[in-house]
Image (cartoon, rainbow, N blue to C red; front, side, top):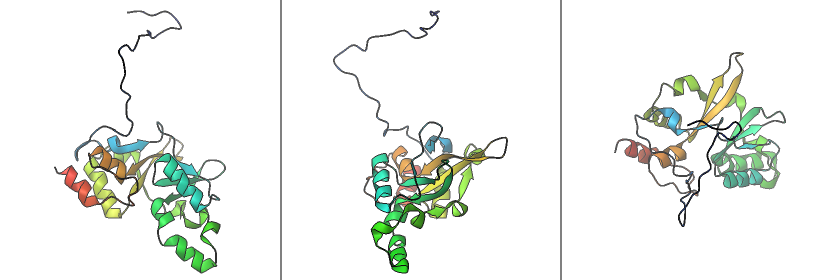
Length: 197
């Protein structure tokens, strides 16, 4: 059926007494042999959760809560990633150690103090992700002892971009494992059990 120039879509009535709303938290279910890209948060489709390095740790934690994430990319004024900070970095021993070492109070610490600098951040390439399965991602996260893993992509000029993020809690949700937002970490045993169920 043809359409008039400037009006390519037909307007239709919703009808009925109500209409269901898609729930973004109920993402597609996956299995161990599903393509890995199905559990990757694609930063071309979803804006990256970022934080300024001079933000206080309390503010960074609030940003995580508001965004519903457990990690933030630390970016400079040009929006280039200079580090990574996770909920574990905020709630772990590191802030207390820094306070003791520097004679500071907790409210004096910034994201820059507790973040993992870019030089120490590891990632996987999008090219490898496209050849992998969900089970491979779970095995990699477990092997590295991480809850998150960045996915990078290089363009024709060899410029590196953060393209996506793997999150163990996101993978657990897609495997059908209930995730409490207050939990600090998911056990890989539960995730692997769901993979093999």
